[in-house]
Length: 431
Image 1 (cartoon, rainbow, N blue to C red):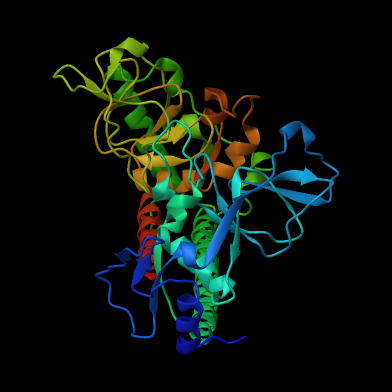
Image 2: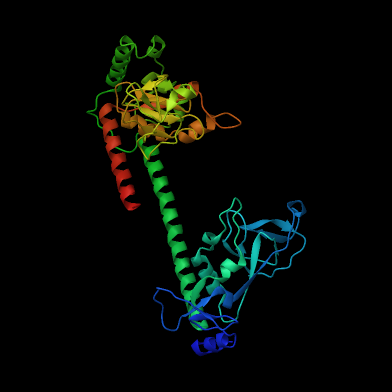
């Protein structure tokens, strides 16, 4: 039956209710007041006028079966299966107890509903889907009792007021809502696909850059031997200042016919080496727990244990400080997460102390940004070499022996500038 405004009036009048006040057995009335502005043909009513709730049936967790063909609904959706059911498909449910008390669900098939949920039965004057939207809008979770175990009662639900349009308008509202939600879902899906494409584009740009294919080769660039001499000179300076050890002066170069396959075909001007030979790799060391505090002091340094404070590119403040200077990292530096997740990198903006979840990488006299972008391409490779049962991690040897290829300094700058330009365009498109 289709109810219009007149039929709705008749329906409520035959049940001793007024559309704008509640009438009690003793003849007293209670006005249903609201400050909200609704169309004239939308009727203010209490939920008690259009629905009833009843508790589901108790079922112990031990009674749930893996091979049951009937879903079992608790306070927040399906919690298992059973061999029997008693609630038809499409029935509205309200979570009754716990964190999800007040949540709105609908059975997707013939089901069993536990006493952790309330079963909703409604009048024919309200479209079931419109009622579902109205219940979700009411935020029934805010009505739960403030106890250790939140509970919502039928009486609290019954006292809530909604405005009810004619049934044909309810149907139109539901149809419009579903159409809009479908469009929103499509937009969100397209946005997610766009994000994935953007991520793939960034990774492709980085991969091409590290193969020497992103920018054209310039015959006027200094030869690789000049960059090698600068790296040697920088390492010698750091050694004389006591910042690196004698063993760090050791150089290595990959075998051209063997390890060089790792890079693919590189331009002849590029240096092929290992990370420890061209960068200072410092593994973190954690101070004692009682030496880490949230209070800043003049002799304390900001402390970072893992990647929890990583930003998109730059390290964010941790709000933690230590006066036990275990591994102090000066700027400019790159920090890498060496414990799950492995391989994420950030740039530092200040001197920090790093714990065991991080490593610092400092280039010997060449572009920090180039090394940063190179390391962005190495995450999946490092993840494959991570070991551990409780959580995956990489040790210092894995990181130090990471193969790396370096172009001439001017080409590094061209590569970095182009990568940053591409990333900036991508960032603007994603806003």
